[in-house]
Image (cartoon, rainbow, N blue to C red):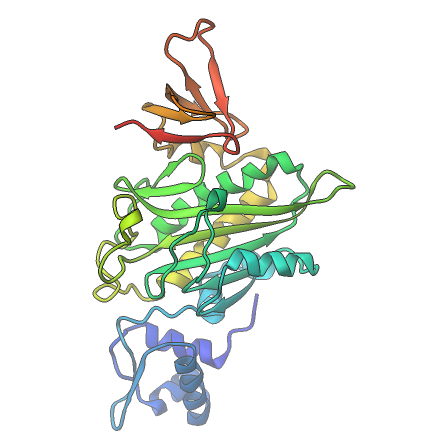
Length: 342
């Protein structure tokens, strides 16, 4: 497990009671370090974005609304095996965490590298769409993987990540309970009929083995509602994991904990990916199963079908009314989009 630094320990102390003041001497005595070491740690934490008030004769206090993202705070929530496998890098802002990791993957970086950001200026969604990734409202991270699977099985990574993301958010968010989050096939998380997270897996194919050379798994979470609301084009669809706005609700360490909870849950699933241990969780959270959907394949007019489940390859199984063969059809996420009928 990674070594816990003085900075980590100081942050731990301040996180025990945000808003409570601790004198530098008190912290130094508790941690058995010098006051100079405490002062240096406070300075580094402030540089990383933590809002720490320092007042003469009162000491230091972590302001209650802080939710800065850092490698140290992620590591605090990581279990030993995940801490040994993943290497997390955090940035305040980037173009796209997926693009960053694709470049690193092409340069030979080992799997387990994670890049997490609080803002993206060129966030990516499926089929070339953009993913709205503003400052102060979300969490965006990508994981570099080198799985020993055929390229056609890459959908297993996306489906596993969807199931794991739902469980991780329900563990990390104080306002959520088990089962609150649903999955809109194949890769979106919904809360109360609003999209709160999206997943995009990209990869490179090895021509020699017909397997993935590497895969980049990217996930974007809407944690809080942006000030002024969502942009007009997504206002009827987008939602947030935490119901209040970013200014009024800051669960301490939420970003870091979601990253860590995801990595803790994802590692054993990834190591047994082809065994499909995630499939039961993925299937039971499906949002459209049991409902009519419009299958948007080919040119309109589109056909209506009843979604009845998912198969072992994470295809959506649908039944078309009046089908003369009365059989189930498996939809491939790369070939169709689905639109639930109101």
